[in-house]
Length: 182
Image 1 (spheres, rainbow, N blue to C red):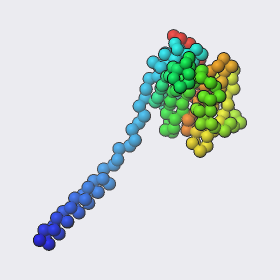
Image 2 (spheres, one colour; image 1 turned 45 degrees about the vertical axis):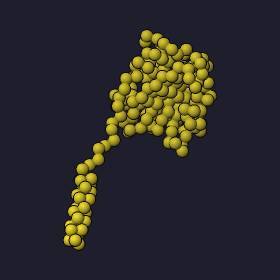
Image 3 (cartoon, one colour; image 1 turned 180 degrees about the vertical axis):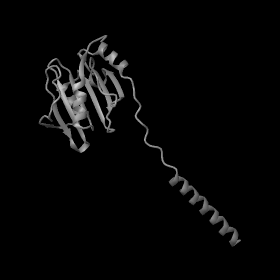
Image 4 (cartoon, rainbow, N blue to C red; image 1 turned 30 degrees about the vertical axis):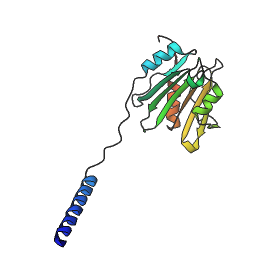
């Protein structure tokens, strides 16, 4: 009886050790690469729905693929508001996101920047958007950097994420006004 128990225990131990060797010897799959998306359907809808001139990136390098896009009309921001969020992955694996809306500027900017602390402009600042200089802010506890611009016409643009200042400036500098059908 003792031999049978000992053999069974050794067999079980052998199976556990064999499984451990397999787990260690076979490499774990790497994190999935972000899926590149097309944001053009959302951009087309934005230019039709937005009561403001939409801003969209033009000429960004292929090394910064778009990975997310969402368009919301109305909703929590209130009737008549249109909000677009467009995210890009940087070559360093960080996120740089464009957020724009005609919702209340102060609360939108505060929410998108996670109530970030306003900073002096990080040099060199990107070109002004429709004559509006960018405001720089950071939410250090979250590792978030942001640039925001609010138009007197009632719309706001925030470029934000955990990307470097250089990546965020590149996205901000790429923004061009887009009109319906264009």
